[in-house]
Image 1 (cartoon, helix red, strand yellow):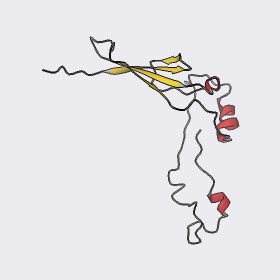
Image 2 (cartoon, helix red, strand yellow):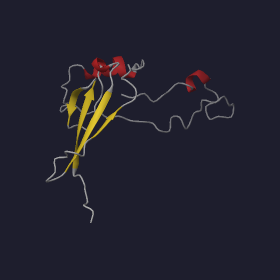
Image 3 (spheres, rainbow, N blue to C red):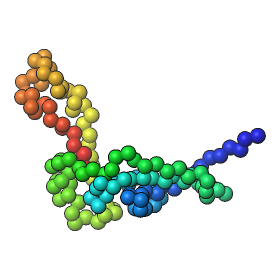
Image 4 (spheres, rainbow, N blue to C red):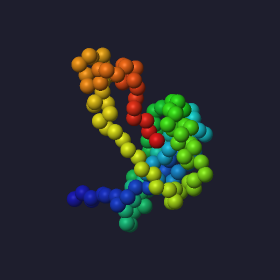
Length: 132
């Protein structure tokens, strides 16, 4: 009979340039120090009575870390908001919105019968949704 193997959770370790940068974390956001380096992740499934040895899986992302494109809402606006705040963010409440209909109501195609045909096309072709 086959033994059922399961994991109650996974320990996820992140590597940048072959060096561990974050242990037991589901996500990692590269920093400026990581530019040009490869990012890898090691997954170790664990469960009561099994520490995951022999079941590890490692993945390396294909593209090295690239610099962010210029996005004014990210920098300097977000940088200004973050300065002077504690890194754990326990004292802050931040509300984000994401208008998923913004692109539905406009079009990047030139068409005189659009809802916003009175608007200059260069304004309609801008990306309105910028990450914070």
